[in-house]
Image (cartoon, rainbow, N blue to C red):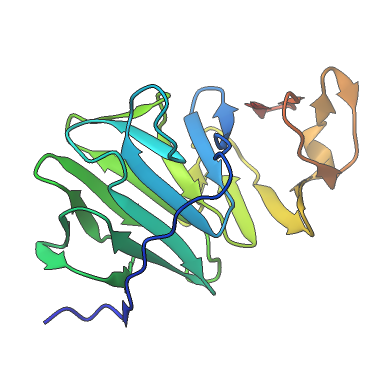
Length: 211
C-alpha cells in the first residue's frame, strides 16, 4: 500500500496558451527550467503540443500534471504512471527520492534537498531528453538556493557562497553576498535585485543568464 497522500483526480483543460518556462543557464553547471506556476503539465515534445515541460520520449501528449499544494508537490496521472513501482490512479504527494515512470520508457526522479523549502528538482532518468535540453526542472516554492552544498536546489560545486532566489509578490528577486561583486550586463548592482529575463548576471565566481 502506498504511503502517499491521495487526492481526487481531475483533468484540467487550459483556457489560455501555456508560456514556456524561464530557463536559468548557469555556466559550468547546467540549464534549469524555472517552473513557478501552480500546475505544470508534462507531455511529449512535438510542435504545437501545449505542455509546460516537454520530453522527447515515448509518452502521451499530456502524460501528467504536477501541482503545488502548500509545501508539497502532487503528481496526477493522465496516462499510466508508476511511483516507486506502484501504479497510481489519482494525484499523490511526491517525496524526496521518488522514482516516477511515465508510460513504459520515461523515468523521472523527484529531489527535494531540504524540507525547509518547498522547491524541488525534477530530473530525467534513462535515455529520454527534455526539449529544450535541460539539466533538470525546478518546481519552485517560495525560495530556491544555488550553491556548493548538497542541500542546495542547484549544486554549483565551484562556488564558495550561495545565491538565493525568492518570491516578492509576482516578482522573483535574487540575493547574494555583496562580496560577490555582482554585475548585471556589465554594470555593478547591489542585492537584492529583480530577476528579469535576458539578464546576464556575473560575479567573482557566478556567471548565469535567465532566458
